[in-house]
Length: 289
Image (cartoon, rainbow, N blue to C red; front, side, top):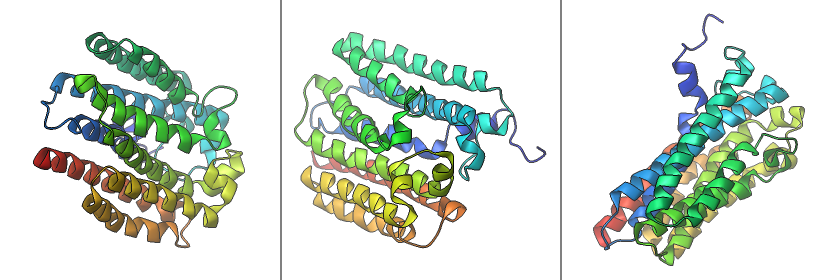
């Protein structure tokens, strides 16, 4: 493959950088909810490290599991290590577990500073990352991906980060958990809408694949609605309006006649919107609380 990415770049691409806002945004939002109390920077950094490690580990785990199943043979999305056959499948699997272990180490450090109950939460997060597409009955293949993304990239990440600041949970954390989780789900739907045809062929029954390209557009709209409702319910109606305005181009694309590669910009658009809204919420909390 003369046009194949280099040895380092291929690993960077397979880590799927455009999905990483799903890990960073809930940590930023959750950490800033404790204002005007002082921010515990070490705990915040540890939360960010854990979230990023689990996200990258999950991305490599998906690359490995989808690759060995043959699902990625008809995928039109980003570069895949296993399906490209440029990297041995076993190396991809080891990379996934290396990132999971790195996140676990950071999690143990965080738990020693706060509460050992976090270890149990961390274990479930690692298992959720691996069994999304791994194991004999991957839940991502049966339409449960959105539920787990909402839980772990929304409520667990946002509420958990808020909790480790001063061992208390602001009531608004649950609303913003809904908001950040919904934005992460919008990112997932951007990916699944693009892959509807390939997933249907491979037997991967995501919600989008079950509904079909046309009806699955409403899943993206539902995710946007969840983000807007969460921000408004958490006491930031102006940010909610900004969110709605920023997601309009994505909604238009989701409800367009585009398929496959024609939907590639939707993932980029959704990631940028999520990152911007996370930064806006973070700045808003520090400016007004």
